Length: 158
Image (cartoon, rainbow, N blue to C red):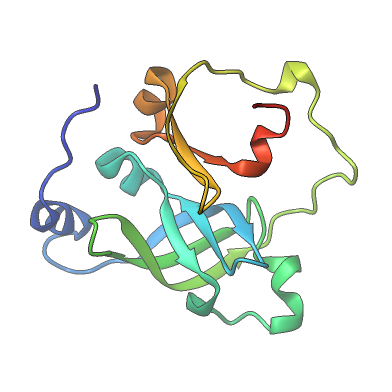
């Protein structure tokens, strides 16, 4: 099992250097224009909390709305301030893109050898919301959380 998460006050004090709030540096790990949010990978936050930093499109500054898909994408480098939400999870504030990632090759599909397969069990699933979670020891050690499961991923299950 993963070690217990420290209390929010300890986390916040660890995020500051010598009592001074500092900017964090990271890389866009995922982003959905349709949903208006994504995640930033940041080594400092990962080492402390074992999770990525959530950000919303409303916190992205200095990017023209017509250029969002060109600049806010997988691999783009950024700076941000970090707060904790009421659940103690990191939230990025004032996200600024510092280096735009190169456009990935078009039509790249993952082959079976590119994919990592894990084995777990469905821990919970609510038909009314259409989602649930999968429990897997191996992914929990890596990401410190269960795996999200959307109903569309259950296409051939009964």
